[in-house]
Length: 551
Image (cartoon, rainbow, N blue to C red):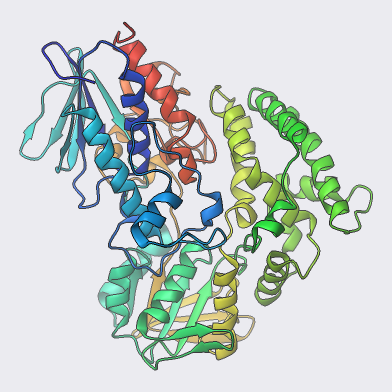
């Protein structure tokens, strides 16, 4: 990339892992091309490259949900910092434990090191502008970006990489926000966790509820306990006396996600053979362009023999038709197979599956196989335009399986169990309790159990619903129908290279979107690996073609 008169001008809104991956791909693709390109990246935060999820100053208690051995975000050839494990070893002077789950802040520091290498390679062609974009609009042959006190020069192309922007509160949360403003009850957010830790310093002896039982809840529990001076060891949890007296996690079904296999050896049991991975890739490519029934049949046909083989190899009995029945239930009502498990039984089962003391179940095996096949899933789905009803089915299947495929480390599940045994965490109200608002906060009730809580922590990740986005410029683009959903429950319509499509399926010229807000047009977007994958490559190649930079 070089700077000069007549150069193509690109604007990127947001600078987290997604846009870092896109910029690395762009610099790589333009390295051997005689062209002049300038890129302005608008990012108002103090953590460009890392983004809020991996902020370098975030609490070290917030861990990744993938171990070192599975972090494969390979750096571009020009980068000097090496892989994450290499960078970590150089920075700390010790080799990373392949089975450990590192703090998200460490990954953020690594991403910022990659950003530094990128800026050096770009030689001034990339400028980071610490301003919030308030509006983008079509102007003549390009796009006008409004940031700070004045509009910027026209851009030949704009890429949106907004991550998960702030959303309008759902009905329940909006009611609670209003209630907290008029009562003694407090409503807090799970993140930033460092901010939550500071607020929690005043919650000693109080009763707290956590809305949501996903990955974020494990971070919240560490902040409320270890973050207040408590500690875990093989004997359990040792309180400091500064943590809340009682913590009530809750969700619609009260089930925590199933932890990943504890070691590389246990994890290897779920590896697909090369021929099985090839068949999965072919099935996914077929499913992505088919009608929903054909898509489901194609996925089932490739999953059933793999899951049956793994279960048999692990010594588990597999009754005829059992795998097919499980998959059918998953397509129609995800999670219904575990509906009879209590919250405690779900946690115990997950721990036993993860440490290998219990033979794998059908569901656990399907989830781990699906995790192993994520690259093949994206490779089959993302390069094509999937019919809306098929997209709903495939995305719904992928999202449902996240209770297995996106599970936490086993250590997190053990910490939750230790907190239950200590009496600090109570799961009696975990399953969809009724709420009554009181002057002091909330009363929770279910099946005759009640609890009064004065603090509610929201740990639910909002869905990528365009109509609920409350942050410009995405909110304005959605209101003006520039960004339109592919179908109900899905996010924006885009082409495989990120080009935005309008409601009629026409290309919105020179406007692109990558990431979570394109869910449905692409799949499995919440993975860090996807930020540095083929979607970024396709966008970079598209820039070359659209801007006439191929010579």
